[in-house]
Amino acid sequence: MAETVIFFLSVFALVTTTQGQSCSKPVGKPNMSLKEEYILNNTFPDQARVSFACNSGYEPSGGSPTITCNAGSWSELTLTCERKSCGALGDVENGNVEYPDGIQFGDKAVITCNPGYALVGDKEILCMAQGWGGRLPTCDAVQCVTPQDVEKATFSPVKESYKYGEVVTYKCSSGLTAIGSLQLTCSDGGKFDVPPPTCVFVQCEDPITGFLDFEEGSQPPYGFNSTIKVKCSQGYELVGEPILQCTIESKWSPGIPTCKSGGNSVGIGLGIFAAVVGVAALVTSIILYKKRSAQRSTDRETAKDGENVRLS
Image (cartoon, rainbow, N blue to C red; front, side):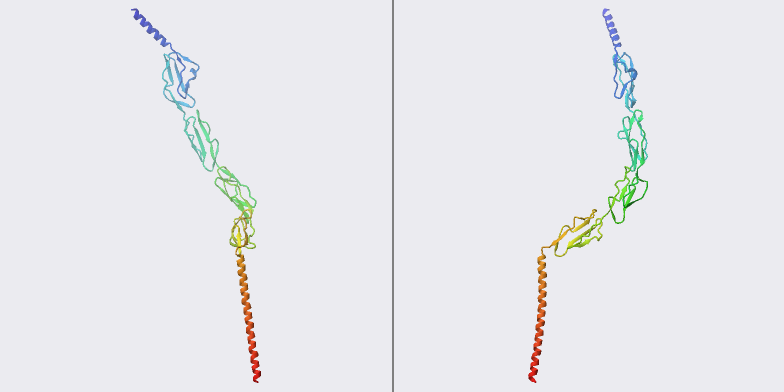
């Protein structure tokens, strides 16, 4: 009998002790926290119930947010939280909206404009707890202002502004040469792609002097990029390049060559001298021959006259 009483007293004491155990502050899963009314408590009595809530930017995706303290231990927390979705932003006229990582909390939208259009507004918008954190930008048509005037040149068409891709063409006055591009194109940045040209007078002097002769190529006057080929007179050698081109500085490139006496000039001179001597000898021979012929004729006539005298 005494043993039975002791057994029941032990069980009662154990049950009473177990029911009196409290629970420490519970810890939730990622992206959730205890609700505000429980945050200041460090312990909770047996059978106490507490609830969790998803953090800002997250929303419940299943399970129960409530757990219960049972004899010093909390029941299983089944709540799960996932990032909120901001949904699609919408379309941008003459542009594109892209979502590199998605459309959930923490992701961003990237807006770009089509060629010929400029972005007005933010190019990136962040998905926040309450939705997208900004307004959609706009894409406005790119325009270039009228290009600057160039001395001794005109351009067309003449307008107050030019759309993306429009071309302005310059023309230098007669006799002038353009340095740079004659055509400017309105580009993405609202500026023309290249600076305007300048117009200059270009004319190279005639290089044909002395023993330097023209062989082929452009005819004077020699303007920019005029190209000629030169050679030296017979008996002379070219020192330098035979092909010349007139540069924008009005100079011949790579420089006007010179002519020097060739290595066979002595031979040519001797040949000419020999020819002259030969001709002189021939002329002398002809003259002597004629004189001798004339003398013979005179002698014959004299002999005939003597015979006639004796016969008479």
